Length: 95
Image 1 (cartoon, rainbow, N blue to C red):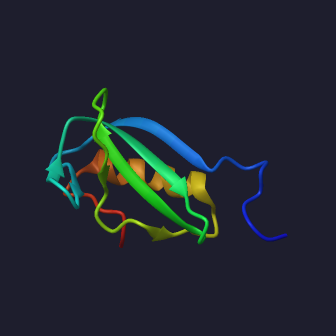
Image 2 (image 1 turned 60 degrees about the vertical axis):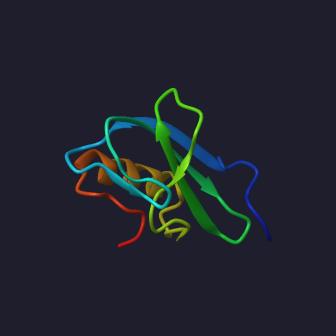
């Protein structure tokens, strides 16, 4: 079967508090505090990772995004990114 599986979620969105040093974005550099993170599957099999200050309108690209989808899937990638941001240190999407 080609294309995404309609039975699988194509996006995960959760809130996280950034750890010391926050998360690095392409547009504004480091962001800190309460953030909302979105991990979205692209048609090419990679994932876009974006974040915003919780409750804000503007979304920013997490540096290193888009990333290849790991064999563990989109949800595993999303939880990995949440963990990275929670630990801080200028978290990025790539290695």
